[in-house]
Amino acid sequence: MKTRMTCKSCKKSMKLQKTHTRDGYQWVCRRRSHSRKFTKNCRAGSIFENSRTSLQSWMTFIYRYCQGLRLRQVDMIQDGIAGSSATLSKMTRKLRMVCRKALRKHKRETGQVVGGRTEFVVIDESNFRHKRKYGRGRAGETWRRKKWVFGILAIKGDRRRPILRLVEQRSRDHLIPIIARHVRQGSTILSDEWRPYRRALTTHGYTHYTVNHSRWFVDPIHGGHTQNIERAWSTYKSQVWRLRGNRTEKLLKEHLTCIEWTYWLGHNHSDGPLGRLLKDIRQQYRV
Ligand SMILES: [Zn+2]
Image (cartoon, rainbow, N blue to C red; front, side, top):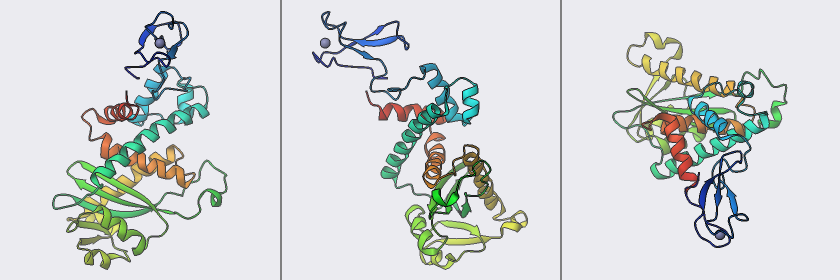
């Protein structure tokens, strides 16, 4: 919500007044002659503008969005957060946009670089297109080129920071530039055994270890780390699948961005994802 609003007629600051409108408040000009004519919805300029969902439902929605709780539209309609899936899609899109913008800013400022002496980096590719359980849609129309999700997972203690990119092919030319951009030189990179680009990693200044996926549990040195990415992948995948986020390339990209936001920004905030999201909303819908 804005904390200040100016009257569009006299440019003086308006007052937030209790009313009998749905939200209970509205902006009113302090000049008596204006007070009837020049009022403004208290949602003006906020993330809630143009939405007809009650603010209480919005709060529930934001809370659930951050916790990743019961986010399927059927559940939310059943719980009375919104009346239709169109409304829910619109609300979700707004929050995703907030996350996307915040992450983009973070990338711009930090470069989103991982690795170094104290952080392990595990890389892997995964195909997110499987399991078209719901749609009978024609996959060829929504998925043209990008097929694989290339993942860089940085591990330091309990912290996990994923970088997830859609790529056309799992080739050296497609993957090495992403690695070079995001992983510090001299870092240790772990991957499974089959890697057409493994030599390129070494020439780019990385220390590369390979681990056999099927044998990770008998590998006492690196086992734990490949186990990490397997677990991370299945977490990300189930999240995307549950929300049917792999229907189109664009949608999947959005979901991957939100996963990155959760780990890079959400978990990094002292109040967790909810604290971070509220901060990002405040910043983007500035007073
Ligand atoms: Zn006025």
